[in-house]
Length: 435
Image (cartoon, one colour):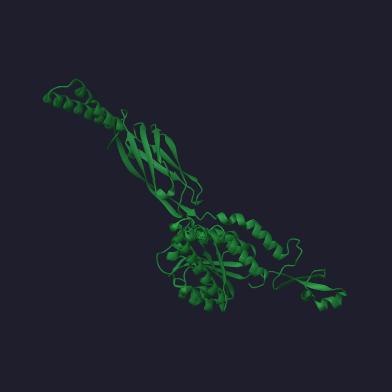
């Protein structure tokens, strides 16, 4: 049972005549007592006439997935199987991170009829967003007292990564087509897989001349090449404590997922096989053996449930994890944070094991605020901030130089620039025939 604001107002009205007219203490207490008894009687009658909220059957219609930042509609269907007309309020008890907003809705359901309640959800966190119950408050005809019941109505929706970086995919696919020779370009595609023979034209590399074919055709013939296909791309995302840090108001892990999705979409279209591993001290998510549309679908489903763990990354286990995925030479991409030498020592110690067998790229997001702070020195506090930012940038440069010295490539960029930058590095390696 609950009381409404109307009941509180009615109780307060009983005090007004006493204040305005005045009376002795005994008379005032008697009048107030009779007034309270009358109000309580009215409330009891109102409660008895209210429809039972437990005589409501609840069903739910809900989409299974939504991208982070997008909106979907959750629909509740309420059927009144009681003997009285139900008037009241329905609250759909979603988690706050589901973004339900104002989830209280007034309803009026005659006996034997059904009403639909729509709640717009705009989630602001990845993962499974759940709802377990619906609260129905049935108000009496006088609006003084109400019956309330919480009814089970479980539901869940999986919030997927937003994949904002897909806007960069068409331009990268166009460059991939140029490399693959599917569009007309001024220079031939590079690579190590033989494609076909054609007549020599001015500007062709003389090293591509096929002398045997030239002798047979009595004309100068050159070999054409295309980027390698069916190569292995293994993406390892660090889900340790550094992935929880927010850079430019976005968790590092979310930026890593954006870069992974763009690269996976591009590599899959290029004919390469992409495997994904989210790891810190144990595997948090793994996708293997998927191609095409299935690859992206499985990736976003797996990523949706992964959250950063506040533990150190176990880099010593990464070479073994890569060997479990493939025994062939592959492009191994480590998406992590490149900070001070001390925090990156584990990464640096295992790079020689990886670079001996694979082509390795280390990708890391950098803080654009640090680059801006370096140039802001108008007062003392900004000078100290600029010094700290300068030191942080120097640390990143030192670690990047150490990574290159160990034979790996480095890609560092801001959250918005890292996904296209990593894809550009992939295309550059493919064009150079290094995959």
